[in-house]
Length: 284
Ligand SMILES: C[C@@](CO)(OP(=O)(O)O)[C@H](O)COP(=O)(O)OP(=O)(O)OC[C@H]1O[C@@H](n2ccc(N)nc2=O)[C@H](O)[C@@H]1O
Ligand SMILES: Nc1ncnc2c1ncn2[C@@H]1O[C@H](COP(=O)(O)OP(=O)(O)O)[C@@H](O)[C@H]1O
Image (tube, rainbow, N blue to C red; front, side):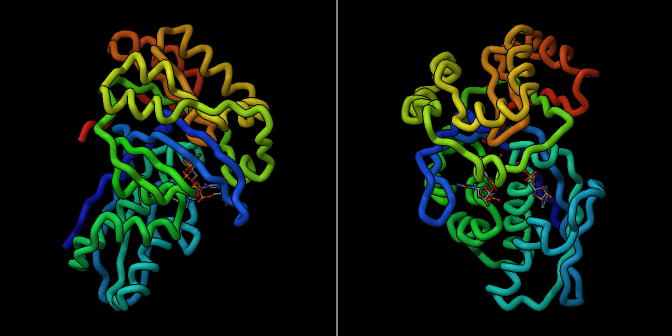
């Protein structure tokens, strides 16, 4: 049986860093939402006991370093599964971009093997397995819009964020989340109002939502890469309702309720940056 799973990208409408923990990780509070920019996973069972990962993104690892490989290996080990698996990842989400592509791929393969091997695992059980692969996997297992806390293991689903167009611009370079966190200076950082942002989504109040969007990591990435600020400013100049860096960056997303404005922002970046997308939010 062949299983096809979609793995959507996420954006961080809000990201607050509460502090560094004794284990070296940071306690976070985030509001995350999925957008209709997705990788596609084609999953097939293999008779031999091995995991084969293939992808059109030839620069990505396809061994134990791939998030999909890791997720499958964990399930096989935990449930003593002897069948193998082949997974083809058709990559569309920009890599190391702050869009959670690797985590979403891992969540998608977990959903896939749950069906294929009839494991009957709940979302919580899939999240618990996925958390060993990456911080954002539990969120990606739940998808849509959610409040996420702790290191990423606490996921509280929210109603879908108010629908809008999303312009996604990824500059040519990538940033390492690990490096940004390693040098992170907590002094004087901006703390977005995450409870307020959460309330705006519960109330479906778009104007309130965009006024409260914020990302504690933005300043650190902008200091290293000023072009991130330039993209954000240009998005606003071309008519985005709001613009923010996603995750640890360097991708910037702009929100627009009006399609012609979104198209104007999109056109302003096409040709200027290589990876530019105009997509919708996911509302289910
Ligand atoms: C911070 C976010 C926000 O969405 O950044 P993006 O990756 O999306 O940019 C994510 O939670 C990242 O998720 P992910 O990229 O899966 O992180 P992981 O592989 O688990 O961790 C990468 C590194 O970031 C640091 N890290 C990550 C999460 C966390 N709560 N505290 C940390 O200090 C750790 O040094 C870790 O080694
Ligand atoms: N399936 C995958 N898709 C993308 N990146 C992957 C995958 N598996 C492992 N990686 C590694 O994870 C790193 C972070 O990738 P990604 O998840 O795209 O970052 P981000 O969460 O910042 O958007 C990359 O440098 C890449 O080498």
